[in-house]
Image 1 (cartoon, rainbow, N blue to C red):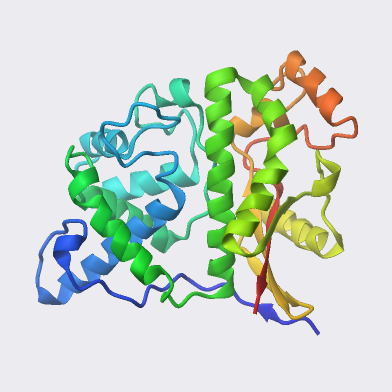
Image 2 (cartoon, one colour):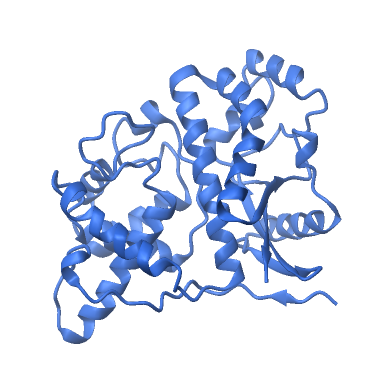
Length: 322
């Protein structure tokens, strides 16, 4: 019998003791200061693992594939001065990135839509809190504060008490971040068609390299695969079919883990957004004729077109040792 491991919320148990080496937070009283610091540390951890690779924490960064964190903070705080509204706006955009929801003016035309990331409600709250209270928009933040925060994060990362669901999600999101950074960079510099050529040659090798770096087995699979190597097996199809049924009824999709042959295997949904439509949308409408020609050339048995936004494109599968 397969043992189902129920997803749990990420809990950080290691508290940093030096406020000087962490983002500045509002001092309310001694009882709330520790909680605020924990929230700030969690927010930095999420950004460091998933966001800074595209959204540079360096205010003076010039070679960008997405808005810097300084640009994001200033755009949001100008429109949402209240901390609660600021954090909610950040959360809403991360969960539903689109031109209509964009707050950083010109970012959509310049960089396109960011990939949709799967963060928990607690993680999004922590990110909003950290960005609001940090001085990430200051020029000296990258030299004076960031190295200390990263050192503390690295020192404590291995001691965090995480479930297999959360461990697998971190592996999947780190891999997604690397793929997203490379893909968005290609789309920005050489266009969709050349980016498709990149996906054909490099995507699987990048995933494999991230598997080696993280010492786990990671893959992307789908019931409507483009590359034959990305076809879902029977167990993966079962999760996909169940997830699609839940999505059609308006439920939020959750990752799931199973114990298979002495290992823990995690399934993590991949949802489409506006950027995906360039290669996975309606042929001849959202997918340009030139792109269609390349798809036919690279993937003669392609099944991965005809999607709409917010649909289940496939899943990340992460196999972990117990």
